[in-house]
Length: 443
Image 1 (cartoon, rainbow, N blue to C red):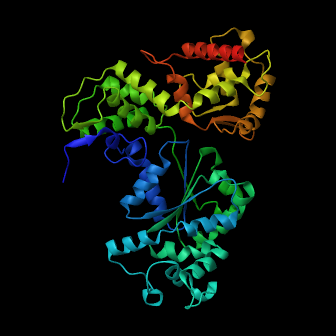
Image 2: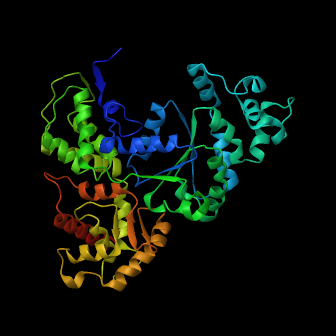
């Protein structure tokens, strides 16, 4: 039964999967690419893009529409290849598989041999009990230990072949180079079995798969999600307000979309916040609410920056100081970071683009850091961040490019202070300089 009362937090969702405000960006380009890749059996569907650009939302929506369930492995830098496959096996949700079978009313191929309740014994039947040394007299616990003792991608093959389950690897770029190499050498098991899988990572690590196993070249379908276009972010605003039958001006829609630094999660949060600022938590369909103004949108953007991204304040202060806390001739860290604030907004700057933006800074030329100072800063950036326990930017010597790994950091820089209008680059630089001076004085 359709409801006529809406919780704002359920319409504009800054966490979880959006329903009322789900938008197929660029007219469904990425959904169609992922569907085609999954249909082409034996493909590695590589979803790449900056943080919070909707990679997980995309594959979850596509799999939901295909009545498929994701089997998700989340990677980190501590696991080896055996632990990787063990995590995959441990993530199997037997209750969910049983539910899917019940809904579909389907029977597994070879069910007569497998039989019984869906669980570890059932999985052993799919894999082949003899091949893993399982006997009928063993308990569920014993069978589980047998399967996990020697984890292998081959153990997942029959499950992925016979059930509407898709293996999804999140954050594969966190794995060490050697572990990546080991895993993707084993990946041919899926390719040969005509099983498509989804791998999710950051854009500039996409080539790691090709370097890890040359046999996979040509088997990888790259779907690269970039920063969202303003027009698509505006559709999120439009869909939410239309769903509740509440009018919204084009000016407000455009302001929120343009200042979301290409991240739908910020668009969702700003739309939710514009209601919360008026102490509105739920509305009835077509309910009359205050006419939201451009000024209201600025307030909502500032409040989102403070409430959701305020953790960047201390990190930014430490980052702009650089590894050498004593006085130095050039504020290289501060000035190079400022280059990311200049329009057009971007997630990466090539080495020559950094120079171009620095030459346009509204500061005396003698304050612009020389080439050797910039090069030294870029080389030291990784270790400096590692000591602080953060990962906001990354310098790639190989491709001479500086990446901002967390675009929300850019949003915070633009909206951490309340404003009556969008911040200009000159105002931002002045604000950053004041912050740095105050921080030096306090030290």
